Length: 306
Image (cartoon, rainbow, N blue to C red; front, side, top):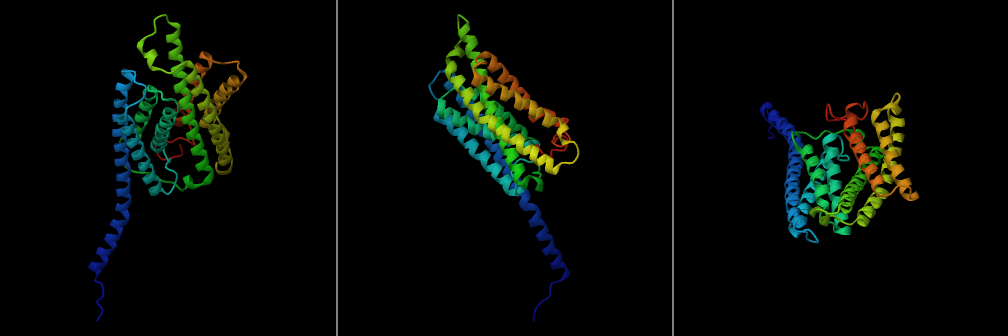
């Protein structure tokens, strides 16, 4: 004799199914933000552990500092992987995730630059910003927004290229800042202690140019794919969007830097100042213009395109 399910058992089964469907994403979201906070803790520890090497003018960072930063980077990468699994898309769908991915890439770039140049003081210039942006992306976060728009191929290429370009010009800014500080110390007759903790002007200049060569092509690719996607998807006069206008201005600044560097007309302090100004323009484009952009605006509801 086969027993039929009573109404009570049917309600229980339906309720269990609903709980199962709702709680799995919540668990994954909790894992994502837990990993993000773990990454923050290791980033903070790594920054603190870099200070003795800088203060004591050691030729390299300690294993403890590199290990803490490495664990932070792994945890951060795992958090982004969880987010990509939950949203089934590139883990860049709003301001929080955009800042998180940028800080992850910036920390990864720190390791590449450090392994190439062994600049002990590099972490003081790069890591605090990565820490602050990761903190912003983790504070008061409760959900992971998702949108099918972020699964399209052109948008993946656009966002990835733009963020890689931003990381490249961030390194250009860091190299320019170190160059300006070092040049000022060299011109003074009594250089202060920080002078001996910075790389030479030649190393700063080399890092400046190489990072510019890395960042500018990605910015160009990101802008071109953005134009193609906007012309296909957006309605109305998309060319007048404030963020597109700001992105073009930022791109022109770095194109001028690149062309004047190749021609040899601008070198040294003048190009370094322009690189600092270019980074300020990039941050305004990345964050500030979003208050005004109709298509790219994502601060008010934390859910639109970055």
